[in-house]
Length: 519
Image 1 (cartoon, rainbow, N blue to C red):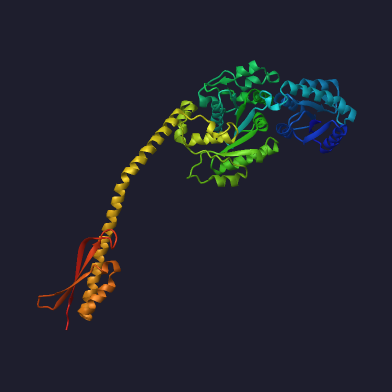
Image 2: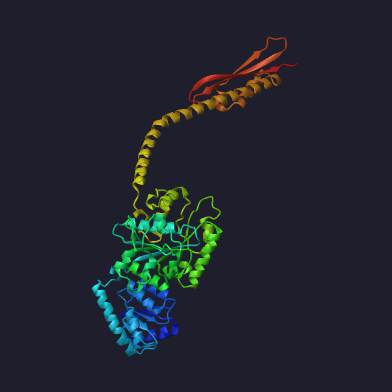
């Protein structure tokens, strides 16, 4: 059975048409779309042979939508369902690539007669192209739109480095960077290039955009990255209409593997079309309340224009640091949308030389560059972060780190005996000091007991005051004074243990305490 996708705005009309398609026994409905955005989303997800588009679908006009489908999905047969079946309507539909015209309330016979040839044509094209949509050159090009919540948040920097990483990841990958910040585009300034052609020069020839005309408008960087720059005169940006933007971006998407569009922070008609056509939308913000509120306002605008849903937008936090008042968790709660897991750090020291010299390839390996690589992988611009080439300087640094790691291991083994000796020496000094303290305390106890209880009890009191390890090594001496005043002195001598009590004896320490013998 032939897979049919319905792009009909009216749910009742779509239901009746789907029932008649099933009644024929030759067609099955694989999905229903109410808007042009839903049509493009379903085409990217499902295998469709015939697409029926209602002439009342929006927000993109039906004829423009047919042209875009024909550019990006040439293996799909598109049939226009229109109320007027005049020759002019038929000619207009055929002019944009439709394979037939269907009345609004078709009968089963009309469906079989109009959809049959279209389905046979689609099957022939699929056999010619290898019967797989993924084999169509350029039909599956990835488009990423990078927008800014407000001016100055780093939108162009993120878009430029993402496109450069995609171009350098694989030599045979065709990557194009489009500057759709039509009035204040800075892509050319960041690369320090000037080009006589811009996107404004393609407006007049957008209906018949040949490969030669498109290549003449593009600037090819030394890295292999192709760029379509914004006009040098900002007022010319107003000439780029939504219709022209759709055709230009459709042509680029069909010819390049990756298309990165810098749409800036002002949503013109062309920028809105870029957001609508993109496979992924990144909204760049900075860790401040103004940028976060602007991001929320931007996503609400896209939702009202049916360009993108908030759930489909990835918010990228740029210039973040530990000292920022707004941390990633707080930003996520304020924006209320999906946040990129990669957070771009505030590494102005690494970025300033790159911006001032106009050579982004000189960005050194560091936290910022590694974060940009991870973000490019997260947006689908490159396969994984590991595929990004590592600069020679980074490889040399890693080699030095490995060499230093081996040297550090050898030095650790050599210094281990010295460290052990220092620890044992400090322990022995602590034991010696403890022995001095115990000897002094025992002498005081013995002298006090000598006067109060007599010499016989003095020795017992000293034994009670000493720990067991020192008691066995204690020597008590009663010293009688030779002066006229009756004074008695009690001396205690202790052996200092060698490292541990009971192992050996290092030296002997003594302490005396004198007491006046009163009557």
